[in-house]
Length: 257
Image (cartoon, rainbow, N blue to C red; front, side, top):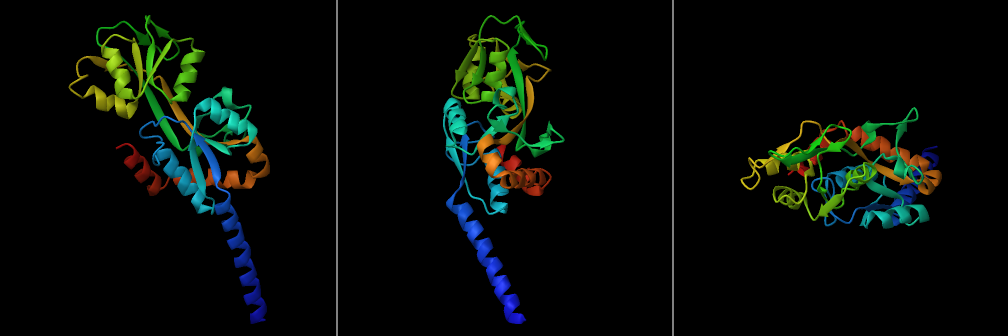
């Protein structure tokens, strides 16, 4: 009887080992933007969103590969099966035709998000340019932002705004104080940092209504979800669990630095 139990345990170990080896041999291919956005993601190393996804995938024996590409190439790669998932994505209707977002009772659930990001509108002191939560007004020049923040760009395009993208958020602020745009869209952490620097202090102000408070997700391709639903659901569930853990608090704290 003991030998049968040992055989069964050995067989189960072999099966589990094979599953883990298969996961390692076939990493989850996740496309990310090709422009780093501190602290959300980086192309050279893991940002906060990548750390959380890596922790979630590793917990189920799945390896992951983050591949930086322009969004159009990412979207086409998702549709053609080159990539399994995209990170980080806001749950915008533009993506629903080819990406699957985590849901509870048919509603996209922010507790499954990798991060919650607040983007603020900043203007020059004395400017009449404004944002009321729905529309911009008194804006003749472009809205300034860092390239790669695609969920902001898509919303601005849908609002019919002229856009000027730059290499980083500091560049957007410099354009703002040099009158090359009316409003800059900056992450809350960076806006607070920059408005306290001597270069920008007393020259700009943060508008009271945020431009966007958005949860960002790991979104799977429809093709991947159709054949690997249990794997995708397990990763999302682990992300949700991590959102309440000390590990995620530490990751997000480190990412803000």
